[in-house]
Amino acid sequence: MKREHVKNLPKIELHCHLDGSIRPETLREIADAQGIALPNDHAQLKELLIAPKDCQNLNDYLERFDLVLTCLQTEAALTAAAIDVISQAAEENIQYIEVRFAPSQHTEKGLSLPKVITAVLAGLEQGQQQFGVKSNALLCGMRHEELKEIEKIVQLAEVYKTSGVVGFDLAGNEIDFPPYTFEETLDLVNQLSIPLTLHAGECGCGKNVADAIHLGAKRIGHGIALKDTPEYFSLLQKENILIEMCPTSNFQTKTVTRLADYPFQTFLEAGINICINTDNRTVSDTTLTDEFMKLHEWYGITYADMEQLNHNAVNGAFISESEKQLLHDQLTKSY
Ligand SMILES: [Zn+2]
Image (cartoon, rainbow, N blue to C red; front, top):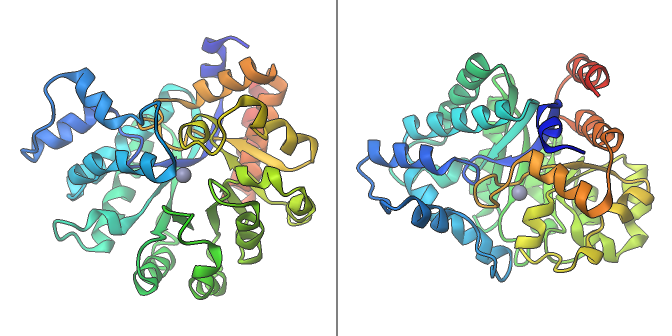
């Protein structure tokens, strides 16, 4: 596969975090507008934003978000961040993207949760008008937060259901807060019929993935730890679960350390649906084009494989059947 062609082919992305995906240049503008001082040296700024090679684990990786979050505490900043992510999606011909964020991370300077959400939705909308990329938002609850705080986010996912919020997710510290911690919260998600994707098996154990599915998840973020528990493979097949794989991020967080341990082919051979994502464009210093090129280098995937991975993403997207059909047609026509 040729990079330029991979970049130009239509693609779908379902797992992209807003705060981890802002261009350093845009973050500088956002910071300047608020009088927040960032290192003048561009290389130094990038170093603060990109996860280091010697990241020890997921929690170490998550610390990279501190500086960005300091800058994302106003409506203008959140709108600008969302526009920036959509412009990056447009650059590599992403036809549809689901952008996720945790509203509670943006209230440090007094923004209300609804204001956080409407500011991001406004940016996604402007991005769509400016760059022609269709997008929707997923709201994340942070695992370390109190359950009643997470429940507020679920309620807001319901409130903004018809304005661009299409699902709910739990992100953050998986080791200390496994899926069943959130049983009641996720019951509410299911009662409200809010589509659910959960980070699970990003670290910890494969059982977290099975538990997430039992709790109602239709998609799994990462799912890597599942590789050691093949007894659950049939559950994923039966429930038609989609795993949102994020190759670069999975190595950075030390979920896997050797290519031989990365379960891309294991999952494919087991007939499990997977799709490919960036997770965090800036923190992981990647693009969706980079992710597909890596799979080509590592496993020799072809354009036909890439097309299938994108069709899988469409099938798992939290959109209507008619919207899915349009995306499927677009992929079929272009590949
Ligand atoms: Zn993620």
